[in-house]
Image (cartoon, rainbow, N blue to C red; front, side, top):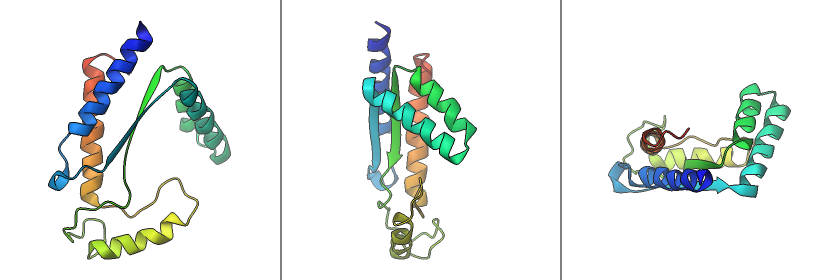
Length: 140
């Protein structure tokens, strides 16, 4: 019963993230619900990264994942951009930002940038919407 309820809330969280407002109405949010063996593997990988990089909070979070019934992962497609040439990313044009990204994708880093500031705001809004849905259902 508990697992079924948690999975239902995870689906509702994904729906909240998907339907959250997006800049220019273009959705670039990626959502994945992880359960079962895949969740166990995610916890093991997070533990491995925490140990390799000496990041204690990764180890704490790996333990939390290992004890969880589900995990909702929400991200944004790195190569998406709004096309306003607003400069919020630190570059004068979206084309310059995309060119700068190419060098970062070749590096062995967990995060790649620069990113479109509007797309990152979209991600924040989607995360907030998902967290609110979890809170409404008393699920951490």
